[in-house]
Image (tube, rainbow, N blue to C red):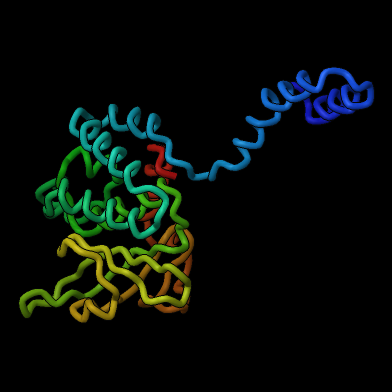
Length: 236
């Protein structure tokens, strides 16, 4: 491809000599428009072919479920709430809850979205992480979402649990995406959840407030590993 200076030198010569404006128009379309379109694409634009290639390395079930996920992603359109509903519904419908011990033979194992789709089963961390990366792949700003560790009241029993929180604005009440219930609800309608700490790719916080608690990559080794693997798979 010619340099930008060469392109504009060509345009200057054509305009100065008054020669074919049609030639100028065609040259503009062929050389400049692709540059403009590439500049307008978001840096985290969904790369479906790359995700499917990564899924093939995991197995046929990962490919099948990834194809279904990509279809629902495309149907969600550009509205952020529609994206949230599509991703939350997909994973809650297509993935079964199971303990890490039963799926991976480990007490605690954090999976990437493709690993989760390959197994078709995972625990609460796996659901929240898969929804987070899927939404990033759809163009959602990472800063609008946090994984939140909570103490959940479930039938009179308090248990550790993780959900995904979406903040339409930094100070707004978050919507909670949870594998335990099918619909998304504002945090005020989830009195059964008591936040302990929250994190995303950019920060770690006490509870869900503004008080920083350090670097999540440095302090959460499992999160660091998932971030690296998810990037390799093509989620962000």
